Image (cartoon, rainbow over all chains, first blue to last red; front, side):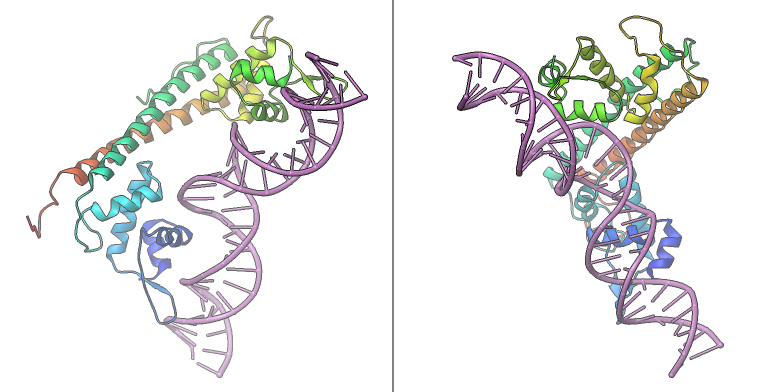
Length: 128
Length: 128
DNA sequence: CTTGAACCTGACATCGATGTTAGCTTCTAC
DNA sequence: GTAGAAGCTAACATCGATGTCAGGTTCAAG
C-alpha cells in the first residue's frame, strides 16, 4: 500500500510516517517513480511504534528497541544488549520521576485552588 | 536588591527573572540608569512563581493566578473569578490525565523491558 | 494524451522556558 | 577618573514531533 492508505489505516499523518522513516523506524520500498510502497505488516509496525511513543520514549530510543522486538518486519529478533536494557531501565526511572513530580504538582495545584477559591474544591477523580 | 542578588537568593537565573518580568509575573522599579531594583518581597514572589511552575502551570496561567495571591505576605487577595477556578480545575484534570498516561507508559515500558531483556521470543518459529 | 489526485523533497513554523552571545551602558570601589 | 564588575536589550539557539506550504513529479483513469 502507499503512504496515504497507511496513514488512513493507522491514524498517523503522512508527515509523521515520513518522519519515522527518516528516523530509521520504518522502511519502505520505492516504486520506479519514487513513491513509498508498504507491505501489510507496516500497519502493525506503525501501531507498535505508536505504542512506544505512548510509553514516553523518543525516536532515538525506539530506534534502538525495535530490532529487539519480535519482528513486525520479519527480521530476526536480536536480543537486547545489557546496555539497552540498562537504558530502558533508566527511562523507566525517568518516568517514575515524572509521575512523582506530577503528583506533587497536583498537590500544589490543589492548594492553589483551595486558596484561590476559598472553598474546598471537591477533588475530582483521583488518577493515582 | 538588584537582579544578581535576587538570582542568587532564589536560585533562578537572571535570564529567567527577566523573562518573568516580560510575562508580567514580576515587576521591578528601575534606577535612573535603567537597572532593575527589587524589594525584599520579590524573593518570596519568585519562590511562589517557582512553585506554580513546579505545579505544571505555564506563564499565562500563572499570570492569571497571581493577582489572587498577590499579597502572599499580607493582605486579602482579590478573590478568584469562577472562571479562573474553573480553569485551574481543568489544569488539575490535565495533570490527572498526564499521570494516568504516564502510569500506562510505565506499564508498557515494563513489558518492553521484559520482552527485550529475557523473555525468549514468543511462539511460532522458535530457533531456541 | 490529459487531467487531477496522490506523492515527492525541502524548508520553515510551532510551543516554552531558558541558555548564550554580542555590543553597550551603568554602577561602584579605588 | 577609571577599571572592571554587573546590568541592559535584542536576538538567535535549543529540543522533538508534527503542521504546513511551495514547487515539482508520478500515478491512474478517462
